[in-house]
Image (cartoon, rainbow, N blue to C red; front, side, top):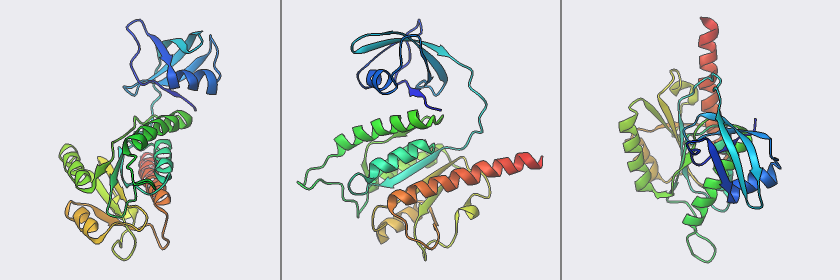
Length: 260
């Protein structure tokens, strides 16, 4: 079910004033009118309903009403370390990650990333802002209940340090390096025989990771995993990996519940 992602908490009286892109989405894209209600997700992750009170030329006023959140099967956070691919492929990856419930998308420049424009300029700030918009749109369209964020692009050394900080916070995190055979002999089932505290997936750009990068990931505690006997595009590999992890964990919990 579609939802609206509220980027800030409502006022003490529950009122919300929306303008800019938020106004455009509700008034122009969703074509809501005064008196309509819209399912909403607060920054805290809690659910609410917006009752539209007034629509003016460029602003919208609504009343935010908290609602009871239905019990859901809670899955561990999935964090995607994505080497930035060329062109608009990262846009696709961010959108698909938002739709499939990834908690954090952490883009980074690997040795084989091609992040620059044809004129040689680096569009990182512009791309980052676009990814943030795409992520919000994906969560709104899909109705994902996972509070998600996208990190600013960082270097390879930066992503390794980021992993170190993450591992300190969540010791039982499963870190998987999505890599082709013959390095990876094991599939996802081997590593997901139990449910981890969180899962980190590292996916390379076109051409995959370099030998030095693979070594660095392995030394940092990542386990190589294979996607089978075909070579997938980076955007396909990211979606495939997230889908497999979510399915295995979700169905394992279903099996456990059914056996009780």
